[in-house]
Length: 452
Image: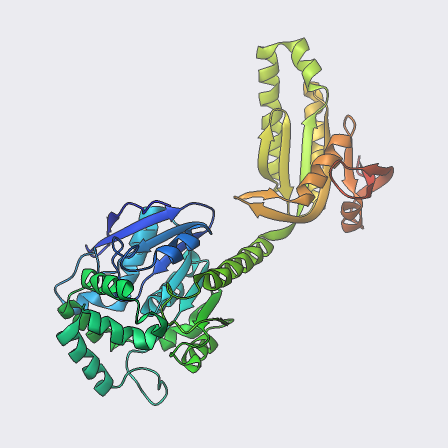
């Protein structure tokens, strides 16, 4: 899979953010990196290539450099690096790529950024995945996992003296990925990667900003599905990740094999398998949410081919336009929603079966003076919203019932008959029928308007 092209987008506060896209598919995954990244070198020296290509196989992967690092602008003021301004970076990338509701994959404090974005713009996020998350930059009695001032000062000293050297990388890997300390080619490449991400001064400026972070108050407000993934034997405490997850309503935690605290090292397949399973769960849940009880009405003109041949193209076109006008007027009258129109047929939905039947009856009556005869089928069931349109088995059933109706006849399913009991509608038994592509035999009924 070819490395994608790097592009730029400007944020609302004038910062240029570098980003890339890879893969395609209905699911968008946005990888929000930790405080260091470089979208050009991340594939090679950064070692993320295997992880990114496997994530791209699940859909469309978007990666970007946050402000202050990599190929993105590096503001000259520390306050321009504030994490809340990172929301502008993420929003600009989503807008530039036409991404509506992605899954945000946040690594380390990229997870904090993802959670802040999900809390601020819940309608723009489908789900959040966290790897090695933290939400507070300095240790406190109620958050004992962060660094103390002394530990931070020791780290800053290491950055000043050895940032981007192989010795610095080996010491880092002893804590984060001990099995990779002795791999010289990786150590040398990762040292180059760190140098490409930021200078020592930039690292220290970012860390001064991070020390002020405490994102815990936003965690109970997260309303999107959230999954945290942790490797079972890594140095980071499971207690910290569990603490974060427990503050997020419905948050989940899974552990995968390995001792790496770095997402792109170790058993990447196990990590991606959990990501894939979670995304599938979220999509299945969304499909359930998009299902609702609806009455569907199908109408079409009887013997339209014969009538068209008798009238000729011009007269037939005028008659069909009159048909469409009448049908749409009746749909408006009975609060129906036109879903699709094909030739002389209409597919519409209603929030109640009685209105669907009444609409069909008035359509038949209104079309009598035109010489057109229509047939209709009505069914009520769970309908799934697919790409903004109603679909699913209930729609198929409604269409099959409509196709069995005769001239000026309205056939309905037993479900419809039972739901409108007590109305002014009555029904005649129309027998059992097989509906093409639908299991079992179906008892159908012919709708009769008592008021007529």
